[in-house]
Image 1 (spheres, rainbow, N blue to C red):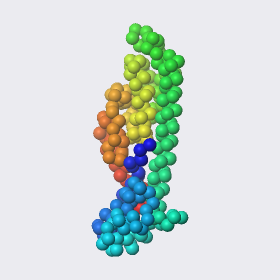
Image 2: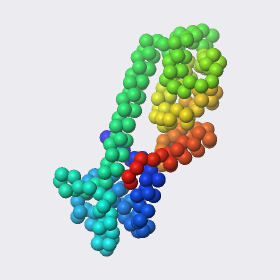
Image 3: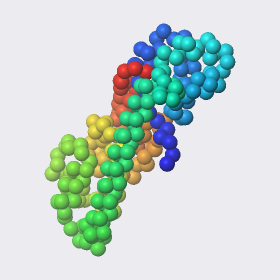
Image 4: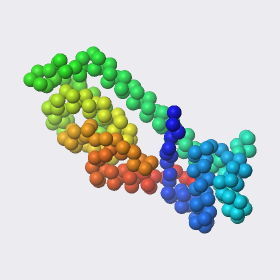
Length: 228
């Protein structure tokens, strides 16, 4: 499995934790954090190699205060270590939820719930249970539910299936529901056709409403933990 390329970074913690650093110290510190994220705990020889001889002599005595040693004497930043572990647990839980939903959807399709043979005048037989699955799966219960249900059943069977399969991935890209599109917007725009792309260290859908994308990016930038 490829190494997770991301972890949460908190600008407020960074500014507070490095306010006594020169720009050179900040750059060297960031190099060490990136090395830890990429390679794990580091020996002092490895740190010497990363910083270079001159910077090691000048900067390591101060930067060393930002690191602790493990039982093998290797150095690591405890805050970064915790963020990596939190990210790993979050990613694993999301993968489990997504796998469970995919299995659930596949089982329902095998049982004929989304079978194109169950059509009347080019539409599936009206199925309130199916809309309730969508309503609960999307998990942003705003808007006129009656109108939303009518809209849902006006979609073609393939569109409803595509939406069901897209929603878990969309939720993964927008885990905070307040930055997700409202259900009405999602259905009207046929947002299941939006590609989910990676944007730096943040994942978002390609055609997310501008206001939501802006809010989501701002939120990611100002979240706080404490000790970088």
